[in-house]
Length: 396
Image 1 (cartoon, rainbow, N blue to C red):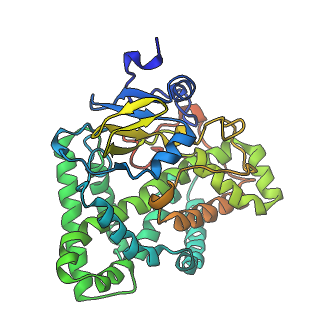
Image 2: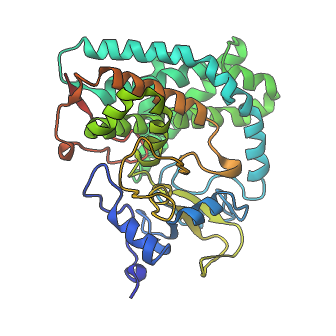
């Protein structure tokens, strides 16, 4: 009997908040393309080995659209990540158009122009946090604040609105409550529609203004509000999680912090290791088969839900020596956290800049900083799509 004859249900139990669910390791060895149940009770194929996940990330036979979206298997009820998006007949062309519009705004050269501002924001946030009585919640004081400040500035979103869209995004990405999801999504789309209208009337030096200059009025009205909502979500949600879990990894591994204090040139390598391990509970990346395909002898039918377990792939012992070990010197480190191929994350350069700035500041302050609660007492948000840890108390 294989592991999946009883069809395990996602998400799998994780006894260690820093670790991967043990069942992923078992599936990787015994059933690397496994039939499992999603949290909604639907069936899908879970792919866990690095080579297979990498290949499928770039496979044109997979996409986010579905010919019959109302009948498609879903991971959750979330409007952002839970099920099919777009028309399978046009999604490639629309995605290519979106990337061509956004690529100049997220090019590494442009991201480096905001480097000094990110460093200044990090120093400001650390100064504010450390001026308060200990303990301080690192998650709320720094891990949430920085990505939101950065994406607000890039998009031209008023910073005073950040708590508002945080609530809407949390609601729109909820896993199960359809009323909460619908109201959050409607509020978010209403906000971004108004924001696009205001930017058309009063342009600024920001990505929304750049996009408005690149499209005609009908395309702007039809597509930009949803695109801006997606950028707000992508621009802060995964970075918040990795900042929190990354800081926890560093503070929980003082030997690795000593290496970074001794040799600051290791920081880029440390960032890549954080990217590899610091999202252990993220849902798999979902796609739908556009045609019948065979993966490792498993027949996947057109329309089937395929779930690419990025975090499991990032712990594949065929690629990563001692994958459970957090090692800031790891090289090479071919993690798949930003995707692969034509869907490689446009915001990768920005995320790396933010992570390196925060962790460099953490290392500078680390001789006095420490966790204010045992690792085993820390909790994670019930919705793994938004925000990672509920809190990360630190003291000094």
